[in-house]
Amino acid sequence: MANLAMTGILEKMTGKDKDYRYMATSDLLNELNKETFKADTDLEIKLSNIIIQQLDDAAGDVSGLAVKCLAPLVKKVSETRVVEMTNKLCDKLLNGKDQHRDVASIALKTVVAEVSVSSLAQSILISLSPQLIKGITTAVSV
Image (cartoon, rainbow, N blue to C red):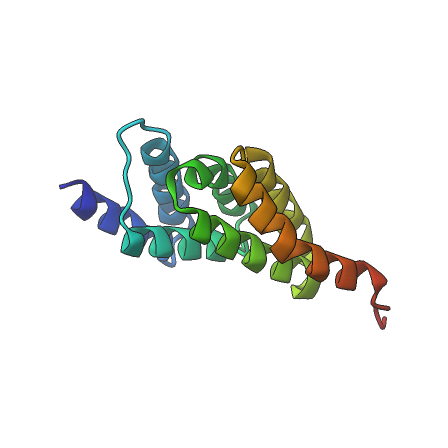
């Protein structure tokens, strides 16, 4: 039953109506904050992709709520998924549109702040360091 409810939430999160997207994202945040929430591999992939996609939402309140979903999500998904999410966020930060970079940087900070396992922190460091160094040393053409 929980999977069916989650499928409905995910469908509404990708809908055209910003009010539905906001409410669905709020519902997801409530689900993620429950101690009993468990996600299988397929659901982890869907959740992480949709939340990262929502960071670019035209409605600022939806993207802000998506950032809030990242903190509990990091604690509920596998280390591999967290590293994938940080790589996607880093790519948005370095290569995304100007208006989306602020949200990407806040989202990346949120994810990194929630990491409490040293092996995961090390994996993220190894993955992100070269990208971030390249980003700050490469000249940007204006």
